[in-house]
Length: 215
Picture 1 (tube, rainbow, N blue to C red):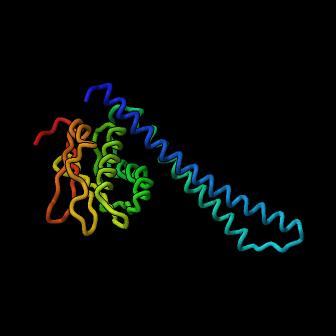
Picture 2 (picture 1 turned 45 degrees about the vertical axis):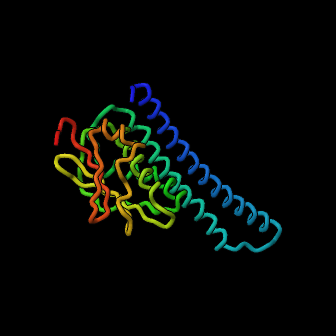
Picture 3 (picture 1 turned 180 degrees about the horizontal axis):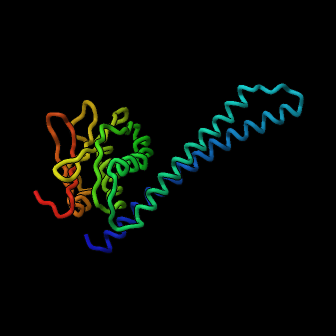
């Protein structure tokens, strides 16, 4: 893949994630607007002499507060994703990097009715491109989701491995959900990453080697 093609692929990924985040924020506003409308209705009813029902008013207020917390978490994730472009490479906490990639992928999993969850994670860090790491993990999750069905669960973890790190992707009762998929193969090779499957456990392993390391 040429440099121009790689830049376009990166921009498409940034746009895809941004569109997903904006859709989530729009949903937050929709719920807040609905709850605010209920509160307005209760106010009009009270002005007409009808008794207020505190529990319904409290429920609407709690809904708004819950959506504000949800919106705050979405914005924090988007902010972290946006800042992943600040530096070409830096020391990255891979557990935090995986947590961000999972958060940014949750809506895609929800659309497929697949539960996306963090599995066992061990502390590990590496000097990588934060943006490319997020893109690699997000693309890997997307490829795994394509092989799962509604009602399945995708469990993702990370651990140190041979001087680098290994990201595990598994789905109970399923064979390895991630293979050497062409949708992210070029980026994986560029980042010195490879995919293998433990046929006994049905777990896919995305091995990310440190720059300069060799097998």
